[in-house]
Image (cartoon, rainbow, N blue to C red):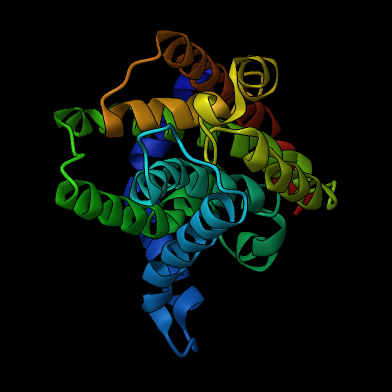
Length: 265
């Protein structure tokens, strides 16, 4: 059977299992925390407040001559929705196998579902950010009908993250340092992406020479297109190509290495 078809069929067959494992991990994550699930709301609010205060008040930057602090807050929030998913999923992807050695050794576990469970576990935080954005945009008269197309970039991002996670979890099972490398890269990449800045803030030269060359920028741009009613066809094309390539390459990798993973365990 074609390895891509085999992995995709396994994801469909084991969907309920992946969802149950995700719910289990969410319970474990919030267990013992004083504020518990409240952190899902507090974390994005604190992030946005910090970015807005630093960029707007410390550096005095604005999206444009007619834009205020509220506009910049919406700009940052619309970028964080996708970036939170990217950062959480990719940082944890390299340790998906390593951190679950005990359970993987005890049962016959469909390892290809690990990134799906991890992705579902990471959804509450960006979902809260999205809800906050919608409320603020609606209150400020900035909400557009294009938000209804949000499932399109979400599906593309899910394909990209699952594909990359398949590759990273295989490599990360052997190379423990991969998690730190990814964390450092993403920690720097956010400052070279449209999450915090716009073309008007940095100028066209820096925008095209640095920010657009960051492949993750196109994901942020497409999400912001949907949320704010814009359209950047080049970014949509790059994003779709990256998502397709990552999913196919990841499916081929995990299908080819499943036997070796089981032997390693």
